[in-house]
Image (cartoon, rainbow, N blue to C red):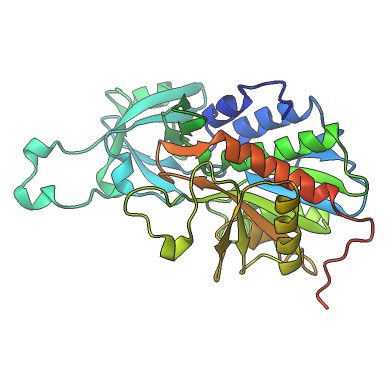
Amino acid sequence: MTNPDPDFLARLLGEPGPSGFEERPARLWRQEAATFAEEVWSDVHGNAFAAVGRERRPRIMLAGHLDEIGVQITHVDEKGFCYFDGIGGWDSQVLVGQRIRLMGREGDVVGVVGKKPIHLMRPEERDKVSKIRDLWVDVGATSRDEVKEMGLRVGDAGVLDSGFVRLAGDRVASRAIDNRVGAWVVLEALRLLSEDPAPHAGCIAVGTVQEEIGYSGGGARSSAFSLEPDAALVVDVTFSTDVPDASPKETGEHRLGGGPVISRGSATHPLVVDRLTDSAEEAEIEHTLMAAPRASRTDADGIFLVRSGVPTGIVSIPNRYMHSPSEMVSRADLENAARLLAAFVRGLEADASFVRE
């Protein structure tokens, strides 16, 4: 795979962008897209778009969400301690002892998550799970006015202050892997299509917003409405089950380096699923299947019922330690997912139909 910027993934993961505050990763994504895409734009919700052959049919939407879970300041007390709530689904135990990067008006401000020390806890308190309401962020300030002078106010968002690291082999770890790697994959697929275009289909990659809090579909719904795609492929992460205490009986058997995961059921369209599996086999891309009998909990849930319906597929990346500061994936899985998406688009005929007979 040709990639003019081999550090783009690390830089994309490094930008703070919790749900509702995705401007920084979206801007970086568009800048990278502008190096090869025919068109690049954004919309009022903050979704980022890049296209190759936008007016061609069939038109395929590739979606990966740019947002990540985060925190938001709810109150600053007179001593300068910042109380907060979670943006998205948190295991509150993960927050204990972490550093937080708050996105203030004058720039980022780093603080630490505080709680009562174990030495001062009563015996019955030590076995209790810490709740977000029992935690606070300490930026080192001594008063509410000092916090204000630092450029912070109620409603400011933040993320865990943990960065990208390279591990053994091709494995990497970072916060925001769920699901900024999906935004990376769809853009890399578009890059492949710019270098070796599909004979018929046009393609639009979308870095969507607000998936982690998208109870009504988030940015994926409005994107699909405006694009009117003939089909959509959503890229997200799923649980890697090659770790201790994982249960393949619940989510299937998926491992780091085992290739992309193709979902069946729920928001996915059977003809899209069949084309995805055929494309993977023809391109000799290792992959696994995952059952999704209920909601997929991805952008697909916000896409597949838009207008008169959008035939939708889901391609997922095996991910260890989801919703933590150290999520882990394999670079090979990301690259193979991009190859799979590009192969799917190239394989579409001019008269491709997804009508179920």
